[in-house]
Amino acid sequence: MTPTEYEYLRKFLRDHSGLDLSADKQYLIESRLLPLARKAGLSGIGELVQKLQGAGASALVTSVVEAMTTNETFFFRDKVPFDHFRDTIMPEIIKARAGRRSVRIWCAAGSTGQEPYSLAMSLKEMGAALTGWRVEIIATDLSQEVLEKAKAGIYSQFEVQRGLPIQMLMKYFKQTGETWQINPELRAMIQHRQLNLLHDFAQLGTFDVIFCRNVLIYFDQDTKINIFNRLARQVEGDGFLVLGAAETVVGLTDTFKPLPERRGLYKPNDPRTAAAKPALAGAAPRVAVMAGR
Amino acid sequence: MKTCLVVDDSSVVRKIARRILEGLEFEVTEAEDGSKALEVCQRQLPDAVLLDWNMPVMDGFEFMGHMRRLPGGDQPKVVFCTTENNVAHIAQALSGGANEYIMKPFDKDIIADKFAEVGLIPVGQAMV
Ligand SMILES: C[S@@+](CC[C@H](N)C(=O)[O-])C[C@H]1O[C@@H](n2cnc3c(N)ncnc32)[C@H](O)[C@@H]1O
Image: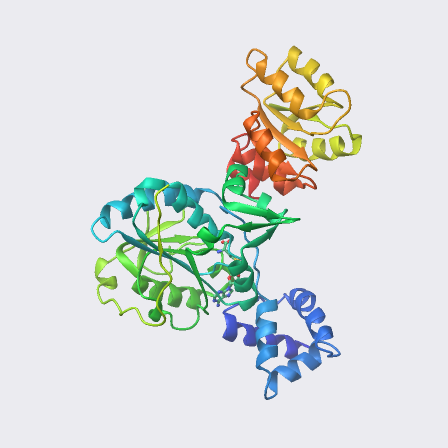
């Protein structure tokens, strides 16, 4: 790969997905894109770059962007954020929303679904406390491929053994041969949508809780700031933002403040930022009404 | 240092498990079947048992039943680790007193996750 080709791809990725590659990530590009180029019948990275610049490359653009995303995820990843969800976030929401009895949750980079399904299982485990509530979980991701897998909710034996307690596997999954599929009732709690965080997301409406974990780490500082500022407009004044273990707003923006003693948890700083709520547009949201047990 | 008893009739599996568990800072002892494992437990109960199901002489499920009836035998965390990967076996193990269940093949990440799940190691250690 020539330096010019590398620079082209760096800029291309920054523009399309926000991925911010340092100057020495040629090996990463090669390991991810060479197989893709071969499969497309191209001789190598050089020809791939040429094709990307030509007309009618949109399918190729998509597959290059998706091939460069890191989709690694586990059920209940890092555990602590899900403890916070159960012990801090939801008790507060249940109190604050007792009148309207509804909660909206957004998984802003849901990947193959482990994160949104972990939230769905947590909510189920809360049982009677949420009986009769309207629960909406929207899981979005840039990559169509991971969304398809998330929608199907089918996982390998290896995947269901990462982070998922065995009791939950027994309770919420059905085994079919070598794979495990999450129950229809939980699948129905989640609405999957393709969404690029670089683009406008105001049309999603406002949320009580936003999980945006392990995606901003790939972006440069300006992109992070821009996304934090736009996320602040989508979270209720008394809502929560949850970030990944290596992510923080500190030093980047004052639209959110970290909660003391609650690692990874943030609240919007000025309740007024969420005051002007855009009306919820788009297709009728899929809303699961929690059944009693 | 916490102790873990690895019970498996395959010496290869025991060796792999030992290496992983020592990496997680366990002191490891081994047994090649349920009855040998029970002898170990009668001398001293470990903090954890990584337990195969199908073994000659005494299988893992029967061993667990005997061990649970020893004085203090409700204390060790039992993590099954077996090729029996169907719902019926998992349910049987759990109702018989198992704390977690690993379906073979396993690797370091799965062992770390499952051991963190039952509180044998801090969660952070599973996040490698
Ligand atoms: C490492 S996964 C994190 C999954 C999950 N949140 C977790 O913490 O386990 C990162 C995900 O972000 C997605 N992603 C990358 N760039 C994105 C963008 N610009 N907009 C939306 N999603 C993006 C990737 O497709 C990938 O599925």
